[in-house]
Amino acid sequence: MYKVIAISGYSGSGKTTISEMLLKKINNIVYFDFGFLFRPLTYYLINELKLNEEEIKKMVLEKKLDQQIKFSYKIINNKVEIGINNYFYDYHVLNTPQMNMNTVTVGTIIGDHLNGFLKKIIDNLKQNSNVLLNARRPVAAYPEVDYHIFLESSFVQRVKRKILMNQESYEVTVKKLKERDEKEKNSGFWKKYNFTKTINTTTLSKDEVLEKVMEIINNEFTYFNNLTLILGAYNCNKNCPYCIAKNNQKFSIDDNLDNLSKIFSELIKNHIRFKRFVVSGNGEPSLY
Image (cartoon, rainbow, N blue to C red; front, side):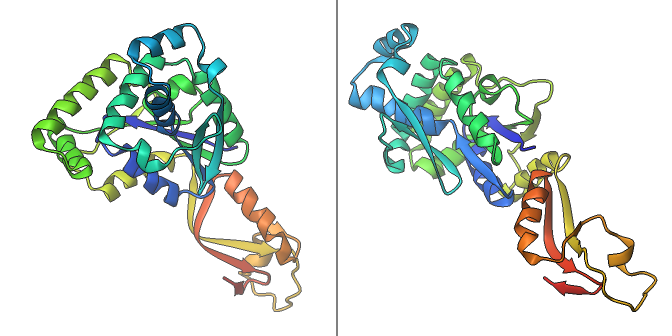
């Protein structure tokens, strides 16, 4: 059964950085950043339709979002991308300091009104892979998450990270981050639950944060340094007393290497991961 891992937390705490690292670390996983929905939607409402905050609020209250906007999605390089009326915006258009602020504003207005759509996407993704969510309120959108990891960091450290990221002055960065924190806090974006695992990233390197996240996930995933697959044909007659092929048939299949893809699929579905894989038929490793 596939799992849903949710990452949330403060702006500048490392959510996106760690999510990108997890995407490379965990096999068979799809990454869904809710910003991939709210950013193009924000751009469309403000830049295409030229709506102000009050007009967006009216559209949401009158439940006209779904009537006037057609949402679609596709998966590119294990990442979910959302289309607005079948158009997929360029990444660089959606990721600017101004879009960051606009997206928080629009996201606050929309709130949980699109949770039904988000849940449908996640349910579809979960049928074939593990799902990694990077979101402000992931549990509200998908209460069935298997893990909720909340990243926090000191305001001073987050300011430093934002200055490096956006190349803006200290004064501008402090002002914007304070405004964003206030909006996110008042909108319930920092909500934690009794099953939430919190990591403070203030003094940690990216690798140290990743290690802590993996420790949480590893409580469910099983990792092996070496995994040996014992094939089903035992034609050796040396009768070695400690032959692993004859004494251990835990991973036994027909002696046909064409079946390996099925075995790998089963291992992934059962959350088994390994660094080194050995195929053996008579106790002597034959294929790596």
